Image (cartoon, rainbow, N blue to C red; front, top):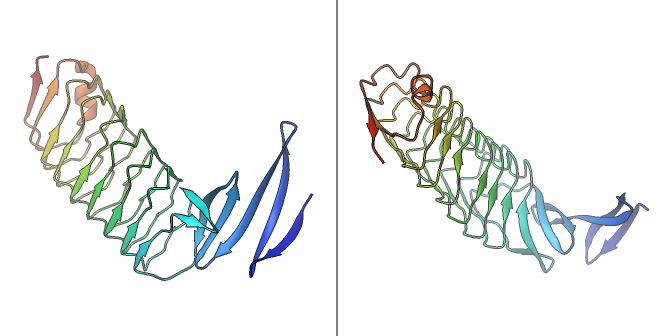
Length: 250
């Protein structure tokens, strides 16, 4: 069931597995600085071994579309300053760019629908990100520790701001939460110490515990009446300068 195949100057390994009575074959290979897996004609990037500072990820490898950036694929690639993701990619796996500490910009195409947990965790030089409207799912702590992040545009196709999304984003000064979002998760903006403005939509119904805790520069926030009063104070614990919380009628 396991075997090796040498083909076109590269070494590939065919791994077979029986799942629920059906055979699934995954091919693993190397193309330049990229390691990848191939299944069903679609490529998942699993590792990057290069040292480029400006990188455009290929849209195909060996004639097959790159549809996914796998978990940890670019983790701790400290030379990377700019990454362009091709429009063949539909999902970005957990911690894919974790602690890429030189990364300042990333281009996410409209083909991406899913961004995993902690994808940009600890990218402390990342300054601005646009999450396209194609994205419907984003994991927790996606930008946690991005201490240089000053601006972010959030997809209007999501329904919640996840736990710890922006924890420790100490340079973030303002954020507009799109209409359609109903929940701001636990510690979503924890220790965003420069945050002065948050635009909250009428669709919001819940602000969870510590969502804006230790947001020491936040002074004024307007909350729709759809949010239960019991959510408000726990959501803003230790926001020491907050002196005016208004309720906006529908």
